[in-house]
Length: 318
Image 1 (cartoon, rainbow, N blue to C red):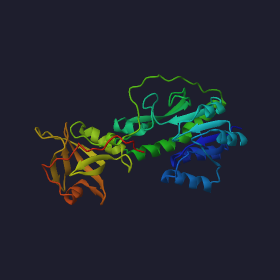
Image 2 (cartoon, helix red, strand yellow):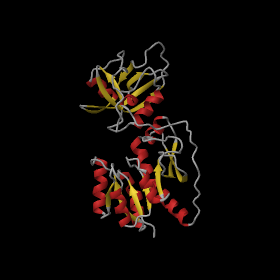
Image 3 (cartoon, rainbow, N blue to C red):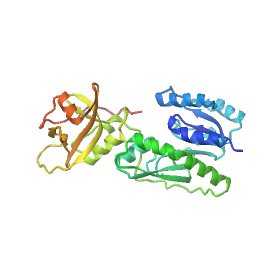
């Protein structure tokens, strides 16, 4: 019987790990060489409760891990949400039986932030793509994939949850097709029109002079979290925009970033280059507020301009 090692650093992998465990195919879970963030800590707690063997990936060398994998007889590997690029020695150990699951329709959105960029670009669907691991990231031959819809109101966390629920189906399809010799690997195109690079702080800063109302709404959906939230400036302070809605606006001659409306019924409305957006939900150091309450608390009024020239810099996020 096959024995799988599952490489992950996120509790979002639990549905797939549980499927392998119940099928009697799970040998161990390999965790990243990193400090325990809340997500990784939650995963570790669950693995301990289920008495699942945990191994640690060593960022500097593979030999200790290879010896442990060999000792428990692991012959297959699956990677999902694992922060490390695996080295050639680990790829060679699995002899072409190490696969990665990437949440995008490869070769589109190669990179470390695929779901963020797909939501930000307004994609209506994505795919979970299972492919062979090669030295070139996200470029190995594709074995199977599952399509997942993205609702216009979905945030990044919604899509991550939906993807996690689809993982067992993809893994079971991969195993079944492998066992029946029906799995046909196809090569990827080397070029793509969209990429998914690591986010920098400048990526999440709203530029009222360049971003459309749809851009801003999608930025808020894609970054609806503590780490990658869309940011805007007012009076040298930075605020997180968690939700925004496109609003029809025919006003001409008004600079983008200018507050055009403020009342209980319509909330806080800001001019964009192609219309306007309603500032629905804002996170501040004092708490999270709807746009109207945020405006009252921070003394915003119609005619004032929100800034887009913050010196955020290019430091990576996450």
